[in-house]
Each structure stands twice: as structure tokens, then as C-alpha cells.
Length: 362
Length: 249
Image (spheres, each protein chain N blue to C red):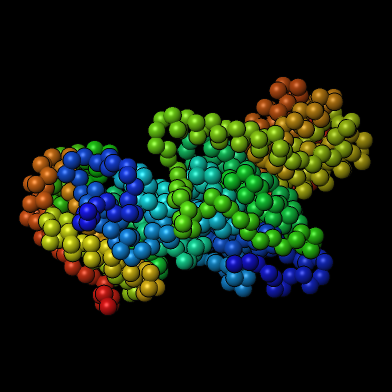
């Protein structure tokens, strides 16, 4: 099944779409053929987009009975060599922990989207960034790691979802797109034509029935203790390779900055306004936006901070989940403060500007 | 010399790891014989279970995918959608399918997913040491309820074949037993039908096989077979349960 055309796009160069739709467009552009998922707000537009588009492009959409089942269907389709995806939000994303560790252990490529809503527990459907830890630190058991990308616009959701399929296949590993309710719901123009339509690449490891060849086995458990130790070594090597090659970030006005605001995703969009305002008033402020959340862009942040930054202000719509990564990156080279909280609060640029000013003076 | 009996081709040379008198070996062999007879080893894919048969990927000489506890039917669904020309079977115990995997199996059955499920019901969690399964009989000993299953505290045994047949209009669903030769032959026929219904794109196939766990039943193998006849079958009647008859042509 080869995706030839996505019907309503390619009309003009720029298309107005919601962030959730942009993810769907990027996925179909990348040759995603299979979507298995369960309804949950605020990701429903993506789910419904795939329900509408996949049958038109020769793909398969299936509404699963739970997120638990959905991610396991993804595992099955990935084992069969298909490019596949599922999406959810906090409570459903939690249920996918079992599937994520399974996919990572079996080294199956898949793209998993979390359109974050405010937790903990059932929480509310308002936007938050409180699934940062769940995405970057696991959610499932054992030593495994997913690649995690944190886009900040509809365009980036489109581009990074597309790229996520490439990364998933390259590393044979699940890739998480960590979005949120703000990004998912807001409409923005998106350029789509710059990326070529992809087909699923051939995967020699996929199971299709052995035919006349030796049989293949896709395993999530080894046969011996030695094998498991070796397996973990291999995975560790792969995760190190990701750390070496996949750190992505955006740095703005950081060269002479004494204070750098660190923010990802939708919060970074708001922070940008606050930083520009403070700059206009003569403050030496910059912004650092991690794009890859695992691996965290440690090298770049460390280098930037060593150029003379005294303070870092981590702003997130959660209780400080990213602070740990920032601290590990700079290893005490700068003072670190956090501003933000979970629960669904949307920052105003002024609110963050005030925090920048307060910190700049102290 | 003429070969009159031997190992099925769809079975590897790896010895079974099971306890003496365990039913898994018999059921594995029946599946392999059916794969041989239907000539589907080249396009069959097995989905493994959790529990004693977790490593049965070593036994079948066809492509295999390991699934986590209870998720076999979901993995099979995704795989079948990605590779519709394959013949997919899950191998699941009663803990796997009737406890932790009830969501997955009920919905796979209701979708009449074109997969085959071999469901081994021995009334006990084997690998973990004999705890109560959803299928444990009333009064039966287990390590979690040492005084025997009491429906007032832990409910009634689940009759999965009957239950699933009610939600799966396009299906072949049967319950068989392996307590004697006559029934082993019948069990093989049911397993064959459970494969055929998938191969011929007629529906969802499931064979529930009543089995014994001598270790955790704490009985000698022969007495286990007697117990299936005297205690298990009266509660779990043998037969076909599909709402629409899908017998062999």
C-alpha cells in the first residue's frame, strides 16, 4: 500500500490547519498507513483526521477498545513492517506505558503522539506540559528510552511528525511527539510541499510469514539471562547514539545573555514575546528552546551557558519537570530558577516578562 | 522404510520445556500438525502468550511475535491489518485471555477479526505457581484461595467460548478437550476449523482446549485426565458455540 495523494492538500503552498491536523498531514506525507487509537480530548481532531484520510490513501484506521489495545495494535502493525501511529493525551498516554516498553524492547518503529492536557489523574482538558516526565522518562518499565520531540508550532508539528517516521525507522525505536492542547487546537498556516511523499521503506526484519526463508522471531524477552544482559547493552549503545546525533534546539539572543529563559513547546511561543520585550528594554536576556526532549540538547545548552550566562529561568506549564534536565546540562555553571505550574494555566507574556525582570534585578 | 509417525514439520527440534503430563505439548503438536496439513507454514505467524508457554516461539517453525500478557489479539489485529495474506494465530492461556486480556479478546471477537485463537483452559495460573484463574472451578484449590474457590468472594468461573460466541456473529468457536485419544482427534478438528475460518475469510476462529496442569493441580497426569472428564467438562461443556454454523465443508 503506497500513499500517492492526500486529497485536500497541495492546493496552495500554505494551508491553514490546526496543530492536530498538521500532525496528521505530516504522518500521511511520511507514508503512515496505520492508525490505531482511542478517543480522548484534546487529540480528537487528529484521530478524526486519520479516520477520514487513511481510508482515502489506502491505509487502515481502527478505533481500538482502549489505548492499551491501540498501542499493541501498533506493535503488531509495526512488526508487519507498516509505518504506524497512535495518539492520545495524559490518561490514555499513561495506559500506553506497557506498549512503549514493548515497542522499544522489540525495537519496533512507531510514532506515538501525546497531546498533553492538565493532570494529574483525570485532570482537565485544558492545556499543560505535565507529561514531560512521562514522555522523557518512560511510563513503562525497564531500561528503555523513546526519542521525544517537542514541536512549538503547527509547522513544526507537521515537519517533526514527518521526520519522526524517518527517525523511528532509522533507530528502530518508538518516537514520541509531545504536543499539547494549545498547539493541537490553534490554527496556523503550514507549508506542506517542501517534503516529498514517502513510501514505507523495505524492512528486512518484518514478519510476513517465512516463505522459503528461515523463520523470524520478534521478541520482547530473551531466552537466557546472558541474552538479556547483552540485549540491554545493545539498547544502551543505541540510546547513546541517539544522544550523540539527535540533539535539537533553537537558541535566540543567547550570545551576550546574562539570563536565559528555557522553555519548550507552546510555552516557548509565549516566552518569545516576553524575552523580546525585556530585550527592548535593554536587558541581556535570551531564550533556549529544546526541540528534542530526549535526547535533551545538553551539549548546546552547556556551551551557551559557559559563555557567561549567570542565570537560567525554566518556564513550563508544569511544576518543574524539565528543571532536572537543565540542571544536568549545566552542572552548576549557572543559577537555575523555575516559573510555572500545571493545572491548565495559560501564561501571559507579561507574566513571564515580570518574572524575567524580577530575576534580572536580583 | 516408510515413515508412519514423526515430528510435524511445523515444529522445531527444540525439546518442550514443560512439566511431565502438561497439556501444552499435546496442544502445540496439534497446532503444528494442522499447519502442516493446511500447508501454511510459509505464511503463518504465531503470537506468543505469557506464562509457561511464553517461549513457545522456540517450538513452532514459522514466524513468531511475542506479545505481552493478554495483548495477543490486539497484536494479531495490527499484524493482520498490515499483512492480510498471512495466517495469524495467538496461543493464550486462561490467565492471559480470560483475565488480563478480556478487553482485547472480546473486541477482537466482536470485530470478527480474521485471526485464530488457541485458548488453553487449565483452570490455573501455571507459571506463577498455581494461583486462581478466572476459570478455576468452584471449590477448586489454588494458592491464592487455599480453601477453594468461593463464588461469594471471587466469583464464578468464566465460560469464554459461550461468551465470545454471543458477540461474534462471523466465527467458529468451539470447546474441546484432550483427556483421551478420541477427544484429542476432535480437538485437532476444531483447531483446523479455527484456522480454516480465517484462511477462507469467513470469520474469527477460536478453539478453547480444556487442559491439565498436573503440577499445580497436584495430581498425577492420569488422574488429571480423569478429573477433566469428571469435574471440568460438566462445568465447561464441549461443543461448537458459534451463533452461525461454520462447520467444515
